[in-house]
Image 1 (cartoon, rainbow, N blue to C red):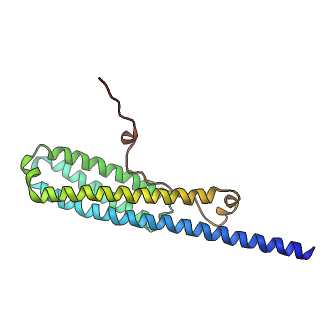
Image 2 (tube, rainbow, N blue to C red; image 1 turned 120 degrees about the vertical axis):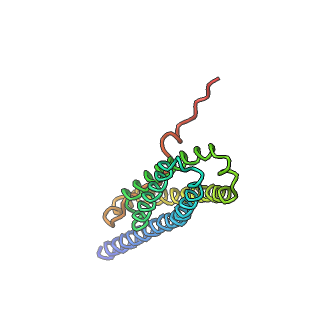
Image 3 (cartoon, one colour; image 1 turned 180 degrees about the vertical axis):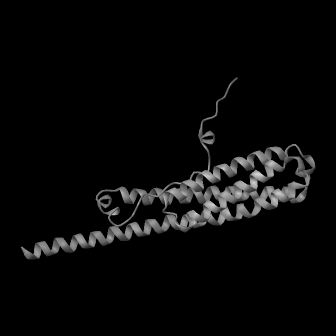
Length: 193
């Protein structure tokens, strides 16, 4: 009888160790995936001041828009640093999501205004920066997708039975997905004839 109880305890301990290690691996994967997003977002943040500086002399009457882009960029960069310190903090990731949405909206307004300045669009530096920004946006999208996939795997591992009985005991909280688009981007377009 003692041997059976001891065997069950050994099996339980092995299961707990295995569950804990699996959750650690999943958590580290999504943290690594967030680090990849951070690299691409920092690249984006570095491009934006150059873009604005290039446009300044052409868009002198649009200083409010230019300042809004820089302000949104600074807020997003600050939120990114906070989230990078602890990607498991759902509030920090949500703040990053919101600040990135605000930055994308500001950049969108800026890019629409550049359409009114053909000389600016024709400038080689501006074209090069715009191309680099487009490439960076694509890289951010790929990194975000990898991060969200890793978060989904981690959250699933935390929620599976019987691991869910122990995940909160071990301090594994649900991670937040990173959304970089507002609701208007996700809504289906309406086609009218």
